[in-house]
Amino acid sequence: MTKFTHVREWPLLESALFVLMSYAAFLIAEVFELTGVVAVLFCGICQAHYTYNNLSSDSRNRTKQLFELLNFLAENFIFTYIGVSMFTFPKHHFDPWFIIAGFITSTLGRAVNIYPLSFLLNLGRKPPIPMNFQHMLFFSGLRGAMSFALAIRNTVSEARQAMLTTTSLIVIATVVLQGGAATHALAYLRIPTGQGQSDENEALPYRDVRSLYQATDTGGPRGRMVVKWSNGAKEVIMPWQLNSYDETPHGSDGGGQKARLARVWGAVDARLLKPLLTHARPPLTDTLPAFMRPVARLLTTTHQYTQGDSTLRRTDSDSDLCIDEPQAMPTSIDPQLSINVRNGYGHV
Image (cartoon, rainbow, N blue to C red; front, side, top):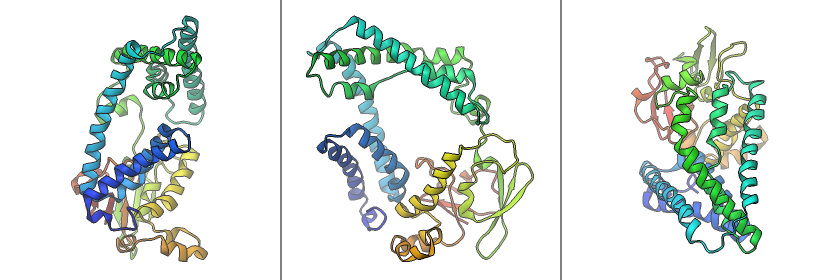
């Protein structure tokens, strides 16, 4: 709807529909007696990845600020409600052995998930996940606002009441003890903190995709570009293909390589889902087989065609990382290449 209609011409209506449609996902799941919490979580992921990119600039600012406010209020409310419900909710059932077992099994479950899975990931991951990071992942533990919301939905039986009580105690303990001691745990494990890129590089030397290449315009008829990799290799690619270069070339031993499944999903997302649900390039007429051209033309907007062949798609998939000034582009891009980014798309 946000792609094929002109609702963006009425930003207030567009923002209202964005919020109401998100809430509708929760209501539809509840009507069919499914988990509305999971439905609205998945809806939020899809909205941020696709729908947000179709909104007008006014609607983007409005919806982002609105959800930031709602997130702040909901986060404070849920933890206040957890604390108050321990003393005011009439359907608690304290079973000491079940509570002890709940703490033990949640701790063991966390350990069984973190350490073996990190070991398996490190078999093919460069750089590997350090042991102090694994310890911090384990210490982060369960802060169960989600689990509390699910446990309190049904307290008709004594067993469900015991489940609610145990869940509430685990949530309170992990929030107060582990959450309060998180800063000290980071310092003890010598994990750098802060917002600076240097701290991230020091903690885990993952090189961003934009630091791996330098792009220069070759002046070709279709706006081809030469990517100069950090190891000296060169490759001619189309501008919209830069988002797929998320790792070093074959044979390079640089860090930051994505897993095969992530690369496959990224390719499907970039060449099928984004062109289908947003105005992203390349259009479906370029990516789908020839026999599907009529359908592809039907699902491609004029805006996708009129962007020009030399459209540079951003490499960041996070909708919050929209760059609106040319000087905000990475310095690894050749200054002779004029790039103007608007609404998530860059025009060379």
